[in-house]
Length: 408
Image 1 (spheres, rainbow, N blue to C red):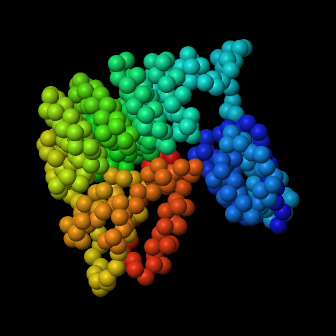
Image 2: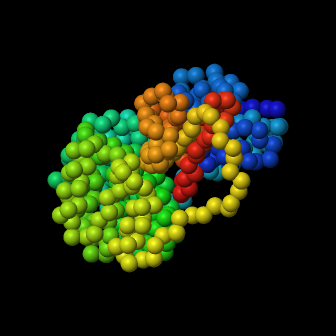
Image 3: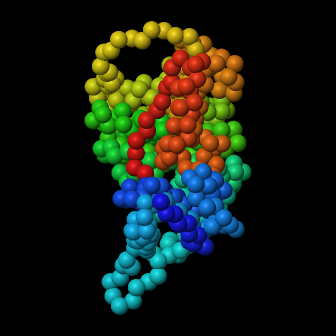
């Protein structure tokens, strides 16, 4: 086996694009392992764990690119390097004449040449505020895909945007559909009269899918960020999105979906809903018997659509009951909270802040798990590690998993 590690200074590439390159290089003949990634602290540790010579990346910074490949022979290694060069080559410059304008490298430059009215920000969380504020200054709505953005910066962005009639979706906004165009982890769904907003990416995805399965289409789905309905943020973007959707004549029903919000913010949202002229479904999961299925059924009833039929599973022998803990491993907080609410009716209260009951429900998409690593909907390694640990623990009686599919 032969190996090669190369550090390219100042060559930034999107982390999701680099994951695809790593996967494609790893699938080439004669390649054992490959890592094409930014030189973050986490990726440097991964490189060392994969058996590469980490001294080759000495002095690397997070905006430097690492290329590391274990190959069967020199020919396979050379082929891998050619494939990396091709994958990372800049796209052909588009031009309608003799002069080809340079590709924009800043939000401001892109706003000058693009005909879009929204900017999608996907940079490390510590840099997201600067880019999002630049977009707002240029009159663009903003979807902040980045997570690990300080809450005070989120509050500042939304306070700046609201009086300018600009919407800030996020931070930590993983899913939106705007006029049929999917952003982030959006699913392919039919167009229709239902618009959704809420502080829940996975909840929006599941609701879109439930409605699509019932032949009910989606017009807009505006994620507002996982903290928008917290006391600190106060529901700023949710209230703004609700007002905009109510003014949209093509929206026949609005749905507001979220994991449990702060009580005073929930009251604020309900007051805004009461003033809407458009029928609106409020789905705060974990309150009473509210689930994503019940929200979809209520939405269908407003449209006069047939009742939704829950998914049915093939009959199989029920396993014998066994003592132990129920472990839930989820990619989103909404699906976790919905599952916990349902389980509580049988198992009693399950406190997320304590493992006293023995049961564990974990949102692996939370900031504490995604700091320095991709979201579990992009990279399943962290979830796989937790799954292996729970499956081999004799105290585990059963494991719950979510499987969330979308464009990545």
